[in-house]
Image (cartoon, rainbow, N blue to C red; front, side, top):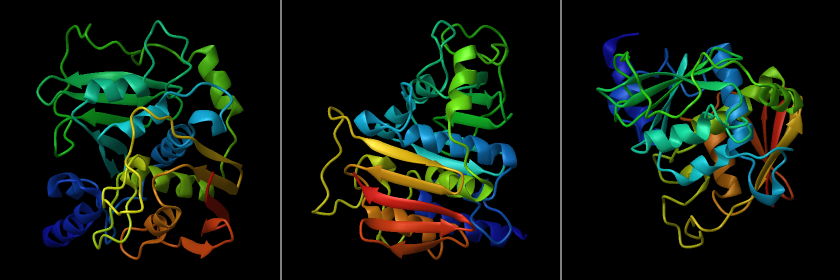
Length: 290
């Protein structure tokens, strides 16, 4: 791929994701925007993140507590790369605290198996590693999504379990209790994560981090930090259902997954009596209001 082609793709991707051109350029692939092309480890991690981010409140399909869904209240830009998932945010330590358990906790609220691996004092970037899959994440305030060079030494101010802390019994239980999506379903669920903060370049739809409407449409309520919003992502195998209150619009989620530019290639949406059903391969994702 030529430099000019990659830069053109990066500019298109940026218009949907809110990334800088440099951050978007790090994630584009050959002739595609790179929102869905990833390693098997990344795919598994992203599908897991979808089930944690999109289960909250009284309607949650999870049997255990879940603090990861709190991340929908933070201002973040997701910058997916083939073998990395970068979260760009000014609240990097707070965001990591909802992702990685502290050593003294019982590992109930965060992503099971996610660990702190390294810090870069230059960029304030934090590198994370998911023990069960080996997948990487970066949480950084750097607008280009850079981690930088890892620093050695003592980092006592970072209160997070590091990669030397093995999987706990409670984490193993949580992972074993989660329903297992098929390969096609994983792609659909991962697509929800990579479009977490996406906005249509033509301003026809917006996801708004499942918290607010960035297009400020008059029929949409404002996001609230004081009100718990219920979401429920449930299913098994090929069949999944996602229901939620408030943001975003049901049709916006269907459009984001099937957009002709930034959508998941091969995904199709069909209107139903309750909302939409998005299909990809043999997998289906029903979308509806609670």
